[in-house]
Length: 233
Image 1: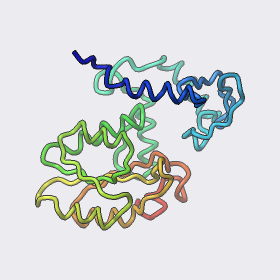
Image 2: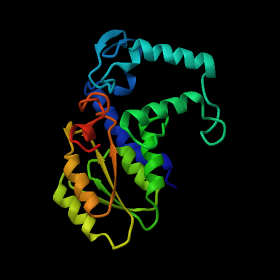
Image 3: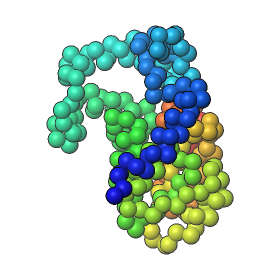
Image 4: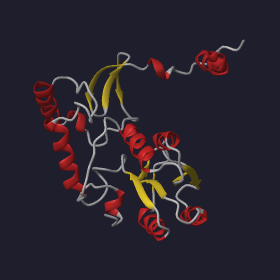
């Protein structure tokens, strides 16, 4: 009888071989103290953090720290419930209002993580009978959001406008269409030609979802991301 864990045996052996060859185990990296947005004490050594997404250093911003302490005093350490039951606090609404004003949008909604934002939005927007057209190099959270819904998923070559348009034109007439893009692709370190892609998507009757997780705050004249920088807002 096959054990459910047996499929991991090759991976376990691969890990053992790597460690035996002198490769440092990434799962043993422990931060004992974070000194700044870019420096931490890891396994007893002061270490420069080159892999952090803390681009703007907001984790050490005095205003952010003060607001965090105030929230703990006012609301405790957690919501103890979902947003639709008993988990919506005044702080959530204030944050959503600030985001709405910042982007000049009609609505805004905050999630606990960027990953969950993509899961919730994508699986809700596109369902059975709809089509999702997305960049092949989209983040894992985008792919997982697609899996949670019942929409047909149609990938296209990375940042290829022509390939995207071809796939849009093959979708049956009358079907709902959602194009998913990213402003900055963090794993590839490149930027999408959003302005042209959004134009093509709308010409073909598709809605557009843009993940700006790695561009909000420091790209664009006002930090509103690649969409602002390319004149899409």
